[in-house]
Structure formats: C-alpha cells, structure tokens
Image (cartoon, rainbow, N blue to C red):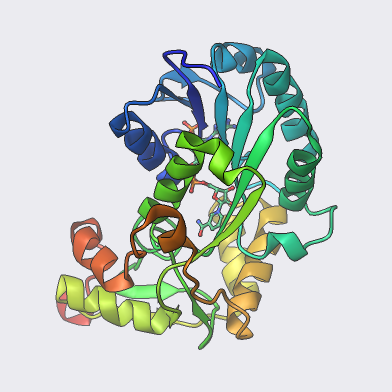
Length: 288
Ligand SMILES: NC(=O)c1ccc[n+]([C@@H]2O[C@H](COP(=O)([O-])OP(=O)(O)OC[C@H]3O[C@@H](n4cnc5c(N)ncnc54)[C@H](OP(=O)(O)O)[C@@H]3O)[C@@H](O)[C@H]2O)c1
C-alpha cells in the first residue's frame, strides 16, 4: 500500500455514500481524493476516459461505484479496473447491492463482483447494502404533499443509513488486509414497511405522511417520464417486486461486526433528517 497524499480515490465522491466515506477517511488521517463530474477534488466521468488516468494518479485504494442508473456497465468498469491495476491500485471496495451474489453473471453488478474476485493483483471487499434510508430524504421515496408513492405493498425492507455503509467502507479501505475477499450484506437493525417508515417520518416532522401503493406499471411509466432511463425502469420493477413479495432484505449484525457500532435505526435517521422534509410533507391540513 502507498502512503501517497491521496491514497484512496472515492468515486461518486459527492454522492450519498462517497461524500460520507471521504469525510470518514479524512477524519482517520488518511489521504482521500473524491471524484465526480462536478464538485469533487478531481473531475472524473465514466464516459470520458481521458479523465481516468489523472484521477488514479498516486492512488493505492479505490472506492468503486459503477455508473449510476444504468444496466450495462461491466465492460466499462473492467477497462477502468485494468487501468487502476496497471497504475498501482491494490485494494478495491465495491458498492454493489443486496442479494447480488445470487444474480447471474450477465447482471452487471454481479459481473463486476466476479471481475474483482478474479483479479490477482487487487484485493477486494464487496458491500451489498439494502435500500438506503436516504432514499426517503434525497430521492425516489421522498414524500410529495405528504405521500410516499411506491409499489412495495406491505413488504418490508431493512433500510440502512448511508452513514453506516460509509463506516463499513471506511473500515475496509483503512484496513484492507483485514477485509480482503469479504462480501458484506449490509442492513439496518429492523425490517419495516414503507407505511411504517411514513409513520416514523410523520412523527419526526409533526405532520401526516402516508404510503400510496401505486400500480407498478403506472409508477414505472411515471418514473421514465420523469427522466429515469427505460432500462433502469425494469430494475425498479424488480426491486419493488422483491419487497412487495416479502423477499426484502432482513436485518443482520454485519455493520456492528465490522464497525463495532450498531446500525442506525430508522427513527434516529428520521429525527436527524427531519429538516430535509420541511416543505415536502404537507398533509391535507396544510394545502393552500
Ligand atoms: N439507493 C439505494 O437504495 C441503493 C441500494 C443498494 C445499492 N445502491 C447503489 O448505490 C450506488 C449509488 O451510490 P450513491 O447513492 O452513494 O451515489 P449517488 O448519491 O447516487 O450519487 C451519484 C454520484 O455519482 C456521480 N456520477 C454520476 N454520473 C457520473 C458519471 N457519468 N461519471 C462519474 N461520476 C458520476 C455523481 O456526481 P456527478 O453527477 O457530479 O458526476 C455523484 O457523485 C448505485 O450503484 C446503486 O446501485 C443504491
């Protein structure tokens, strides 16, 4: 391992996990360089290979987040990993997703996992998190006019705080030898339904929040109309079907085993995050 000033390159370094990971690595006194198209330490664009070599300069460890909102990226990632290996990266922590170890090799995140597993000169740790709690504050589960619209029925999920994912990632990148070859399924401490999550958010913000279990086709059509690529719409179908059919993630003790601290509860996340929902959770009594 190198002790270069920028020892770890954090892809998606301005995103939900990458930004938190970078802060944790810096707090540990480790060199860290965030990468994204805008707003990071270094400009990095998956679709512009001329940005790749400069981003990797002096780097010994890598937090790998594959191109987001896509379904076909395994070759692109493999080419980048070839370069990373050639310039001296010796450990990769890869942000995959819950249950991906059971997917066939043609599924891109599984193909990336298998690529990493097959590399001799690079050790790896694979993180397979459940749905992020931050989906409720930052992205597609955010309440609109007091309603969270998603086709998950009464199925539950062990939502995890991105802080806990970042804490596990930081541990693997700070001590790669201790986590080489690991595949960590990462969950929060309890499996809850979206309806239960809505109740917790309502309690945190002091206004009604409910779950609307919309027809799945209608929801996907709406997501695609709002800008989600059509092929990614099919991933959303599979993800929501998994939860709705009762096959969502189940809590485990991996976060605590790796970090020494129990994972954050949804109630604690909601209390900490309440300000993010100001103005978007208005119930009927608040409509103009
Ligand atoms: N949300 C969930 O519940 C969940 C659950 C399991 C796994 N995951 C996985 O988590 C990953 C996303 O991680 P995240 O949530 O931490 O990130 P995120 O918050 O979605 O942020 C995306 C990051 O990627 C960067 N980015 C976007 N397009 C890029 C491009 N073409 N080239 C380089 N960088 C680009 C963005 O910055 P710029 O736009 O400035 O480039 C940003 O830093 C995905 O692989 C997803 O499958 C998510």
